[in-house]
Length: 65
Image (cartoon, rainbow, N blue to C red; front, side, top):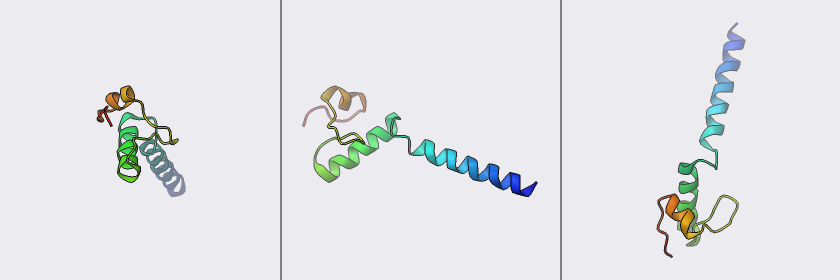
């Protein structure tokens, strides 16, 4: 019984960690773009593509360079 509960707790922890790292959420896209800007001077997606001005506006980032 304790083994099953431990498995469920571990599984729940892994699910929440995966949800936190989901690159498609607005918060995570914004955070990644802001960190990329600090590192490179460009607002980038998690795949390395530069965000368009309209994408930056949708994420609440400055739309001008």
